[in-house]
Image 1 (cartoon, rainbow, N blue to C red):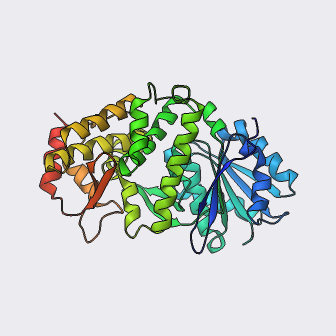
Image 2: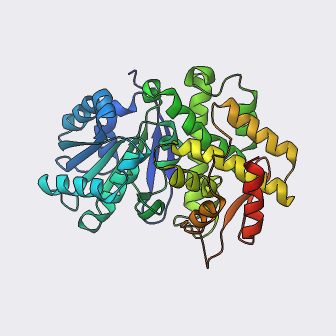
Image 3: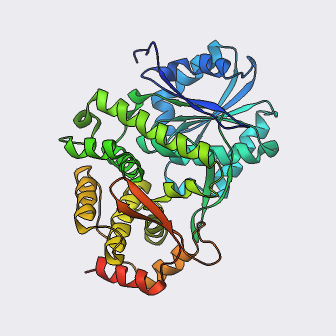
Length: 371
């Protein structure tokens, strides 16, 4: 990996827990120096959590950089896949923390995709009532979304991420070169979150993806456009997190496509669809609902769907019982006072949050999606 001389640094300027998102080719090999810059003391204990595939590819690079700066390092490998996001895996990390004698000034480091980041972040939030967490995402989805903002969690049989905590990282380190080893399906799943940012307010990002001949692969995008996507998406996420750290208002817009998408993930079984694939289906579904309610145009809905398909993602609603979908959506963590809150598009680049959509309107939308 060639080292980037001047990586991009985006400051997450929170009042209590500010940190940097560092983006640059080769920065993974400099993680030890980055921790020192982030005021982590030499000699601190660091538990690196990864899965076997990522550990084989990047584990030695990460460990060697940490050891070079005199950190006391151990690595734990956990299983792969969404099905690992459960209390048993958290207990496995806690057991490793106990065996390593992690202290309050120790660090957990998540090296992997969104699943590793979510679980490790939650384990860090709950070990000794909260120790430091470093996020090093190696998937596109985690780079542009999951690793930034401090939302950690695991799944419950009744719904996705129902168990969790807000726990901001001390550092997010994004090395675009790790995407070269990412399976194409995983890369495309991450593009769903990138398209989401275009829908939420970055009209130029959406237009740029539309004009790209092949946004479904790193090679199709090219290095310059890929790095631009990472920086624009991370900056968009950071702006929202700074404005609303604990999702009391504005941050809820980041759930665009997720309410329908989480229902797909839950009812089809975790792992049947990747998270980004389910979000893509969810964005197409909420787009149809918005057309049905007259809040945006058929032309814009079709533009969104065409871009989702162009990025190699699904848009077709699966065969699910409507009553099960409604029940799952009502159990979602975004429900308030038993009112379902949906992030609804009004134009490309503009959304609003609505909580006055009726059960009948959603059932009618599901009927239309199933035909």
